[in-house]
Image (cartoon, rainbow, N blue to C red; front, side, top):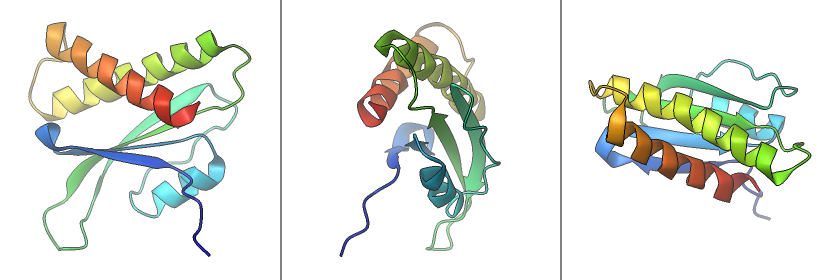
Length: 123
């Protein structure tokens, strides 16, 4: 029997970064088996963590961003606001790691893309 996936992942090749998102403590624990992120406060609206992971191939460490979105928002707008908030943290970290100023159009496009990805994977 196949175990249901408790998180979503996406590789941002252009930024050499792996994104993870979950809405459950179990999902966060599963993500932490891959990347040594810290614990999350499940009572918070959302949290973003960054770290590095070692590919099985033995290749150099790669950047990773883990995002927790609390599933208990009362209104869709609150959920969307949390997605945008956490997407901003993630985009700033990704652009900083890429030695790109986290501002202007690069930041705006990346925040928009991550917000949509979070929304589609957490609602």
